[in-house]
Length: 290
Image (tube, rainbow, N blue to C red; front, side, top):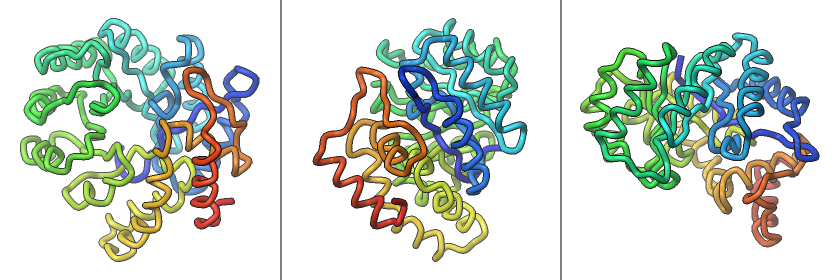
């Protein structure tokens, strides 16, 4: 289920509301471009600014539009275990194929606390669970030894690794083997992670260049390593540009430049600085995306 290019899709807004028409168009574009999975309500989807009703609606809407053509991995993580269970139950009710659970942020649980959190959610909701390790956002690192413990739980099936640390990725694979699928959470690490034995990426760059990200992953898996490597280097300027300011500001700005969504954010996120906007525009122009 979890392989190739899975897009951490943006949540388009229009006049303060979720723009469902634009979201539906983006989903159809991704499927046509070869994207292998849709991940709504993650970091890139501005989940922390959605209220519960909006969060549930975006997941439900995405599942309905996708209509079983590719997997939907719904972002349902929160920093309270009971809240995470509540949101995950709603995602299962909507028909999501899996749930992406970010490590609890701000409260900085211990490794034992992380283990108990994920175990509680896995036992409460019978849905495949993807762990999400992003210490730069959460201030806590899910260590390989903890991942190995969690991999023993039947419905914990994958981890999105966004530490940028290939040594840690290698240790997770060494300890877990085939018991858990490793997915890149940073576009710049996708190719090295595939080389270590990972299966794909939950991608920010795929919001803007879905076909190239998908082809890079599929080329590697087919043994076409030179082709995959060429696409990696082609995408590197875009990967960097997607984080020139806080994600998802560059991704949404790029999509607006491409005419696919309105350039609208919810505070505390705001528009890019003029200097960075021009840097982003040049990258998109060089890649012939605008």
